[in-house]
Image (cartoon, rainbow, N blue to C red; front, top):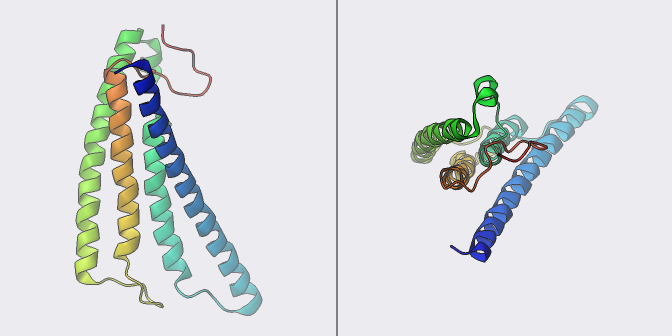
Length: 177
């Protein structure tokens, strides 16, 4: 792969990542708006948005799963790096590779099980209480976020194993020596 091919591939992944982040931000805005409007309507008019609790909880689940995609790709999830920071760069890369492979394996299993939950919810025709909307659609959108997380974490892991990734992706971190 030439330098321009690698830059183009990185650009595509960055655009995909930006779309993931915008989608997660959109879900966060909708959850916030539903909660705010629901509280105002409940206290001022003694009326509530039908299925507002269901929408809020289902969209919050979607938001979390799409957020997993961003955190997995950027490596911004919670880490304990006491041993990592004391290790030499080659061992840091080994530790990062092992952690990414383990995370990828767990994420694949989690995504598989969530997919079975989507199918069982579809087959059981589970619906929201007030509006009778199918719940499986919300589960499916959440599953798409997990599938995106697998793709992004696989890209991150491949870059790390190929030696193209940084071992420490935190903002302001020094480049590897």
